[in-house]
Length: 351
Image (cartoon, rainbow, N blue to C red; front, side, top):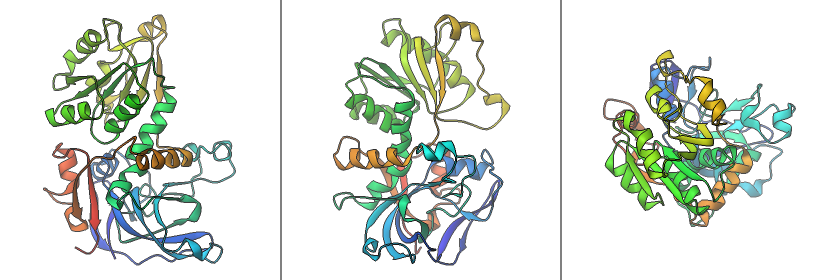
């Protein structure tokens, strides 16, 4: 089978790999769709290096179970599923609480340290599979595995409520999910910040009440203050992770209001993109800075239900073959240069 393989920073290839054999409690999934994520780009450019190499990328995965291990019910064969990409140790405090994304001794993390879904087949524990209804295409379902779950988890980390004024800084993929979750919660003010007009117009379609052009980040804080009557936002989801975008959120004149929660989701390489803020404004305004990573298995189950009920929509830009992921005009290059609106999904693994 063909696979997008990570060999180390800035070393990706389209390479042949053997179809894996499911072990005792595992299943074999024929991948029908796998969405590209900005995280895959981080592996390509060296932002992420988790000291594991020669594995298949891809962690937003949907497909059909075709084989099962000896201890798995054969009734699962033929099931349409999305995949939860963490496999924890099962014994630490985080795993016992169902927070495998915080496990310090992960057995697997598909597409991060072990083989993921940018290939024709993937094996994983049967417990990592969440069924999807026939009403969802595989292309619609694949982005749930990160694009929607990350938004669901971040909204819980923020403790978002119907009275919150919300800013989504960076709208494309996860950002669209956050806008829709805030809209579903009837938040009175939902502000989407994006550089491209198509991203701003899409955010309005999904429930944003205001949009701000983020091309000049030095003007964003004032625009947030204006849209919130001078109060600032009670929640800012920061999905970009650049110094200038984080700077727009905090400080005496930042976009974050009193007792506001800044939820950091995005990140970028280099010390020039360190998060820096003098503590005095944070102290005086009683603000919180919160990190949010990945999601729990329960978050994935909730995300699937939200999409199945049409309460959240995944936004697919285009579908491509696996041979179109790399290269100067490939899927990852299009993500890097913002030449997509929503998710690019691989659904042809033969090309």
